[in-house]
Length: 185
Image 1 (tube, rainbow, N blue to C red):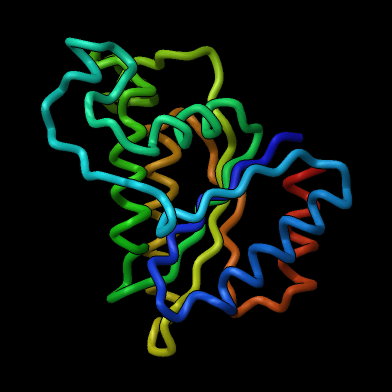
Image 2: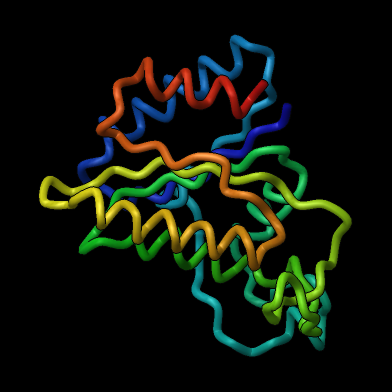
């Protein structure tokens, strides 16, 4: 299985989070999975300008030249994408949200009805399944985590994917490994 990890932790307190992702990556590689790991804070990520060039001028390609072209390629070629981020004021990092915005060229601007809702037409035949790893803040409650899960479920729906699991750093590493073993099986 091809797995792409997108680490949206902006820092500076990222050591524990990165160590958890590194351990998951090592476990997957030991199980013979092909893992690509992107650390967003180390990449040149520029925000979407809303120019719509990716839909009209250069269909499927963002006109902003940055490192998200590699992310989009690895996203598309993956069987599973793990979106990883700490929560800040109840929401994933702005860095991860910027990357999510920059995935829009993977879809057509045209709208169709899907499951009773308006959705963009797919540009490609297949899209990866999704999972998340969230690092809650101490004050985050189960309800807060439910809101974040619903956000990622909606993201998955509109991006023609399925959200298979939401892991948190509150889970033990063994629990994370058990949950991800089912995903990477």
